[in-house]
Length: 347
Image 1 (tube, helix red, strand yellow):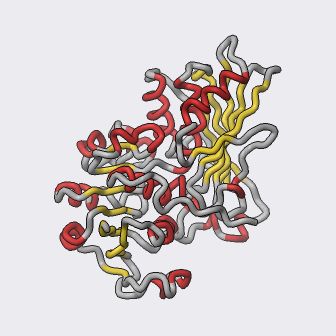
Image 2 (cartoon, rainbow, N blue to C red):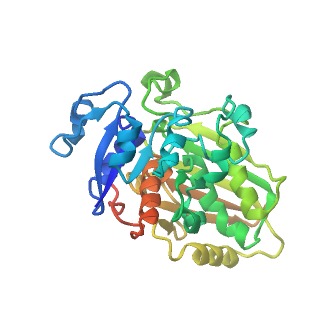
């Protein structure tokens, strides 16, 4: 039984890690930290854990955390892991970071998209991008895993087979994504205040969302085209969880519907957490709620010569904590499904 630490255990991704790890047969959560709730039992802050966890929230003691755990999840907001994570990895600890702080390989992207200079750019090359369906061979030997963003996960999984089989025009990719409000985190922010977002549906950060360079970085790796750019527009939907991404792109000449179906089956037939939705159905967020699944479907628009790909994930699970646990399973040689096969709560 390995011992697990969670830094930032009271945010949405932190408590989702606690929920998922409770049923994990190979891991035990032994240390949880909070910057504002030290000394309280986690069930005092999150009553859903009463009679489940009796852990107390601690102030972060890096040396103690490193000495008394085997793997550490950092569930801190963007920018706050930059000092902590390098210290832990220098001590030889395996770290899975759920922020964006180590995802981008080019340090010049951070001032452009996150408005800060990266203080330890050498760690950007050391980190492994934690999308198992692309990089599990690198993940298994990693010391620092940069857990992917939720929007990039939903988009990259939808496009990977089409790119690998050279079926699409990668100069014409348009990604239209809708997310529940939990993607904004647990902190109070006006756009996510109930009167602001209920009975409302809006686009935000159009043309400058911080996940854009992450998506383009990984698509460039798949295509080899360093000039690749996409259109990505996120939307806020008045629901708690879920991301539905609709991806539009042109098909190469002569590509048929069967070629696309075969590409998805070839890429994902053995993937535990990818489910292909058969026609006439398409993915819906309700059917991945609380799970680590990514559902994928597509339609060919013969009139325009384009394929329309639709993916659905739970942004807090496959888009964050569930994918992080999947990465931990790879690190320690367990089946990737371990602790992650909860059926959806429905309706």
